[in-house]
Image (cartoon, rainbow, N blue to C red; front, top):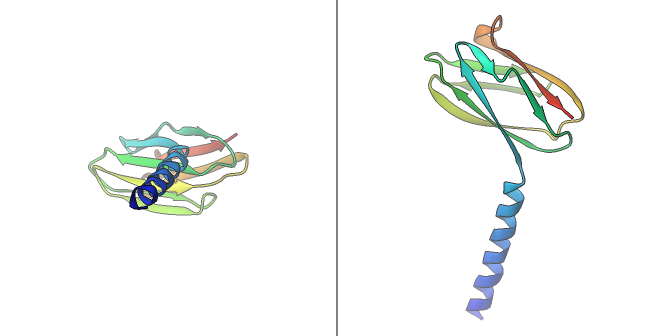
Length: 109
């Protein structure tokens, strides 16, 4: 009975990891007070895992009213932001501390 229960639990965990692995992931780098890439294409109607890596020696704040996100990214660190599912369209974002150079857009297709 215990072996059967363990099998059911491990199959359930395998199924969960498969679901989590299906999540769409993109890397966004902050370097020289700019976002790289400045345009991120993602599938529409899907949850997105956005990993933001700030390679600058100063913090940045990613701000996007269209994505309903405002996140501080400390200097030389990474954070994860979940967005979506997004309808098809363009969703602008900027670096609040360097708004003249740190601009980008998420394009959901």
